[in-house]
Image (cartoon, rainbow, N blue to C red; front, side, top):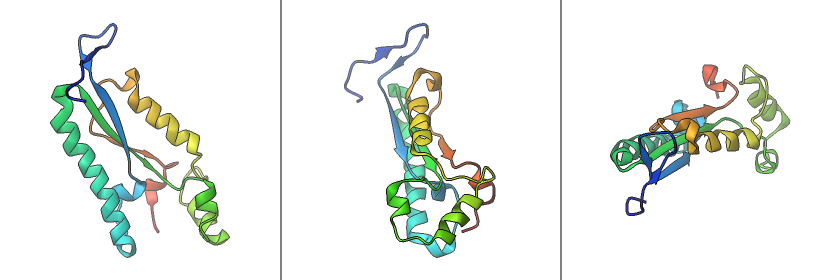
Length: 136
């Protein structure tokens, strides 16, 4: 990406080479003792995002991260979790919902686009507010 020709952003005085959007989890922004290996790996993605964003910003490369909450996918539903667990996941969101995959995609599209052309190094929770009181 550093080697490619920068793109001129119409109407702006800056150039862009690329936008990278990593995917972590709301677990990358919280601390849950009994899930230490998983939490550590997600914190690693968040940290890598920040370090790389700082390193490559001068090259016109923006790097951000989305941190989804409990996403309502066939894998989540078919992973053997009990209905009680799934209900508890919904209850952790002040909005009382599981995240639709399209909402995560919309966040990635936003962070990749012109509307976010000056945003770099952030980890955006897409969690229905679950991080406001993440308890499991």
